[in-house]
Length: 461
Image (cartoon, rainbow, N blue to C red; front, side):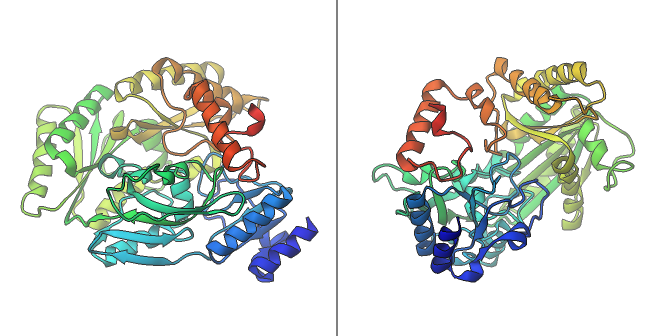
């Protein structure tokens, strides 16, 4: 290891190969338990240095782990003393924002917040948004195909990427920096790297498709008596708001009561308690009619008894206060077992009942908090239990995932696979799909140096 560290210093400079306490001190804004245990943390300044680092590591059969904002929840950036960690934090320039083409070219170390603000400065809108926007970086949220709260309208990260540049395990630079919505010239190679969690290549630069900046923004917190009413409210919102509907975030009372006083930090705007709560968000470009359309929706929901109460944000501060309730997830990240599944909206209620019954049969004291992006089939389940019994966390995982099978659900909606969900990937992918994944890994990274052990492994053959 000593020899390779000297050669890495020759590539990126001595100040950019951190070891010991300097590597371990790499900032963790979210406590996702992915502390840097690597032998060294390497900080290249550009694509050429990334290429040289990977070429050297490939020749030496040295494992290398992409290490970004560390906001992932599936152990996708876990390191050991045998690894080299690679952070692209120095590659943090927004190279171009083109207001005419509505595109942005950003290096992998740019944070989501920086991208959002740069787009806003040009009168445009960056279409991806997640709670970790201040820490997550371009390379990370593209390589994990992040989702977030605006998927209903704008889609996953994949839908916002026009082109990208990536470095393969042997140092080869694949520059697919497409800037066009339409380009049907052969294979769309960027798709290999979006959502593959750094096991096929390291993303270094990305071309994003931006959107027109919304001129109106409406947010409401609604309360419902049951899941059937929630579904009808969602359908009504889709029908009456159309493409302006941007988010529909459901919170069971199990989550809401942990986020609001007296247990949580936020004040509930409702005087009464309800079984379910949802945030309805719309963004539009018609100031003359959008607000009235939103009000008409809420009035019809109240008149028909589909919602029991509603709070409408009258300012940006009030919108932020409503979203802060939904964003109160740090207690989950720190303490709970967290799951992120996808299944048909019509199956969500039955699935939640199934896992509540199964887990409480094993652990009667368990708190099962459920919430998520209902409008795009994504449910988050966080489970807190006081049980210290050996194998408790594995048993909880088993219950959550095995109950997805009858519904043909996906074990990961937006968080990825990493190490944590790898043992259950076969529940959502066929043997043929898994074999093809291994074939791609073996072809692009035959020595298994890139983020080894995550998603899919060559030794699984």
